[in-house]
Figure 1 (spheres, rainbow, N blue to C red):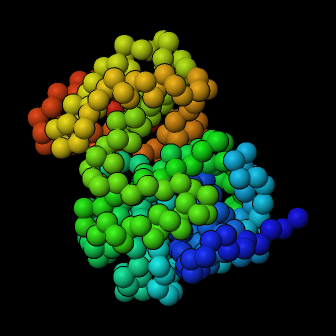
Figure 2: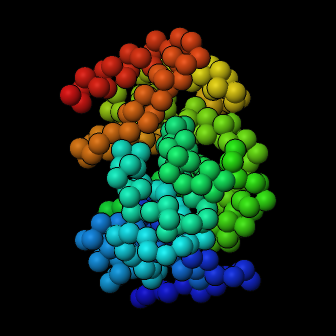
Length: 308
């Protein structure tokens, strides 16, 4: 049975582009469309045809099972209020060709990517005053074009920008929250990005290197986990953000033992890995700020060798 969204708040309908309707992008597209907003998914021709014909089918313990109608195209052809960039870092450069700056105009660009370096790339292509990086905490998988499974019982976004006025972020945060994704506006972009990176990098590097879940890392490789948390925290502080390895460790110990990183899942599926966006970014930050990160270097070397 199809459910084509209805407006759930008194705000005006938005026009939202979603660049990369995979796990995260497809989840957000479905929820925003169900809330009564116009959604344009930007993807390859085959995926676009499926989305135009069938919509997006979401299966979620948090939001239920429903299908949302969306538009789809291979390229943005009109201005939008908001463009969510939800591709993997490995596909970012070619994907951005689907969103010409002259067409986007002054629309707000919100990248929800892993890593810390992509905001600079986006600000080179689009207006800096329209780029607001975000981080999302969710587990969502595209099992087929237009079919999304949300595995986590939560989906939360933090928005922050060094170049966008804070007041401009309140409206999209309210819209996304009303659609079912609690979204907070944070004051410090660097701190927001590093807060996720300090958790993500150790999780991604260790689970992918050893091919085991977080529970196995906590028990069989705890010393390496502690060392990697110390290294990423030191890098975070060097880059001007808070760095508290003890707090991050508490997060690791609270997560379900069966947790896998998205990089680990990509490795298992034979997909390209975001090694450069995660581990490579750590190493570049270490060089820039003269911070010693021997375990990060070793893990990166082993992962690169394993993939060669």
